[in-house]
Length: 175
Image (cartoon, rainbow, N blue to C red; front, side, top):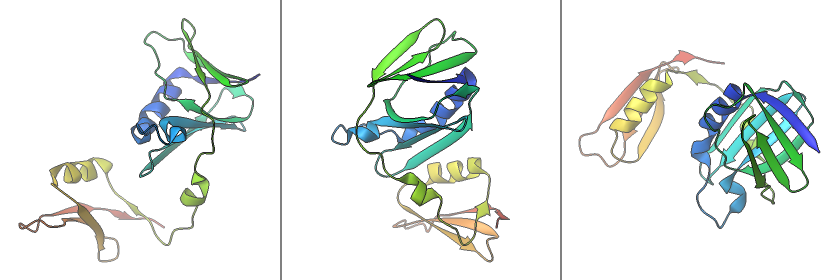
């Protein structure tokens, strides 16, 4: 049996940050779950619905290394400060103190996401994500994102919009 202990609040934050990329399509069962990787006292959660991929990592209190794909789970209210996650054979158990949930591990090979996210980038930009969300919510269709000047601003232009709608977001230069 392999087991890790994580602060419940950290687990909840991670779950919230990745759950919107869990697939609802049953023909690719591996994408209906969450890839959990415990390595060197860090837990990484990764989800992919075939179009978007979300990943998040945080520190563990203690535990063993493992890699499994768990079905989506929820964290009940009134849980203990720490959560134990146990892997035993083909099952994963989340022990929240007053409640335990056990699930059958999803079998199959998850996408090799590390190749994708660890690619060397030519440049990066930094901007307020709230502004991006506001701009995207205002759009009514497909958008094109491009950069003005030497990464001074991100411009979002709606495609096939008669009004030629554009949104300009300020950004700061990255690497």
